[in-house]
Amino acid sequence: MLKTIRNYILIAILAYGLYFVVDHHFIMDGKDFYLLKKSELTLSYTFYNIKDRKIESIMEIDDLRNDGIGDLLVEIGLITEEKKNKLEAKFDAEDE
Image (cartoon, rainbow, N blue to C red; front, side):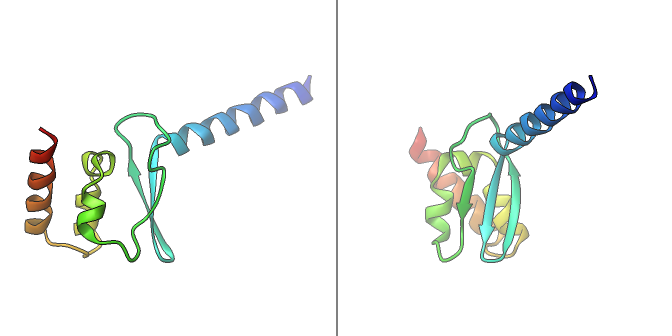
């Protein structure tokens, strides 16, 4: 009985861990990493390294841009708010 309860708890912990992974982007920048909530459950761009990448190539990715990568880049000081707004407008216009 106790072993069964322990197994259910372990399965619940593993299920939540999987849910957490598919619900967040793990953005890595060298030794630092940041969590960015996804707008939908998916495995696309779950792990993404921004180190040594051009800002435009990062902002070009629809999934990351729509989930707020621009705000994160501003927060960590890689771009300004003005540059973020210009890049978002540029890539959003291309999508239409």
